[in-house]
Image (cartoon, rainbow, N blue to C red; front, side, top):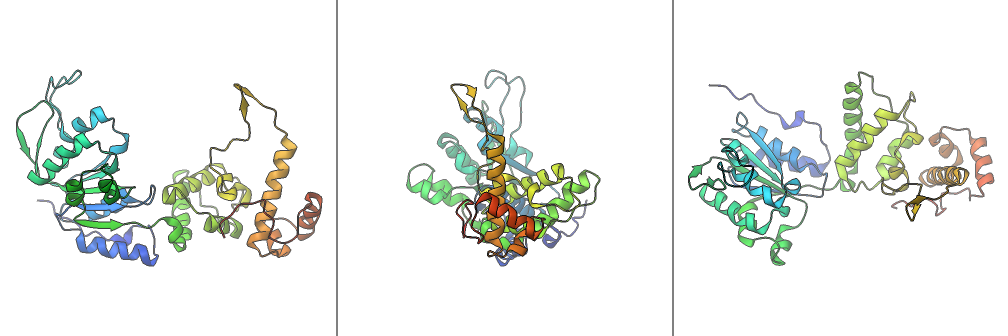
Length: 340
């Protein structure tokens, strides 16, 4: 019989802020429990990572960990995916197929975005959790299972239950042990650690040494609210590693959405009646330059020398560009929209 090797949560780099350390400490306490665990948090906060940590720190770690994203499963398929189906149960069911619960037997199943599970399937999910058996679609045989259920939700299930959008009895069955993950904007001290981790990982994948980040880049990362949380930060780091050719990552290498707090899908070219409209390149470049200078003056408190360092230019050059653009020389211009 295989022997489970000790698992250390501290070996996983995700954060050292007090709030995340509290989460990790709680994971250690509840990891071996067979009670249902509900992990709540905004999209991108790392719910699947915490679910995996719970599994790896438990006595079930030698058995399967089966993650399921309920949000991407069509309503017509989710029942078959979760509980399996028998041959001939529906068109295309050419053979018996076990579902995800059977695949997780002896281990853990993680149902992410459980708030997207249709009401019709919620009834059957409740029955599985209560009776610890599954019935495949089109079948009559009850298949016993030994599975620890972990669920994730980006919405408040209690509120959804109060509004009649989620079964109240299922909510209480899932919420035996609750874990709440804070958004990245509420644990900003973790950002440098996460950036270092992601940049190193993506650089290693390219077979390159990680490039250092300028102080201006890190300041931009620290000020940005990260609505997509850790996942958005990870993608921003990946883009930098893939596109930056500088010895040191400079402010110009940072995604525009991070610098100006605009959605990444904000395109410079608009269409009218299906035809692209003309765009002035000079005006666009002037806008980018004005935004960067305004940002640098704001974060440096209006100190031109510090602002010039952030922009990797000479102080005299910065003064010339401020005068050319007609900008105030303090960091109080409204051109760049940032959170105070």
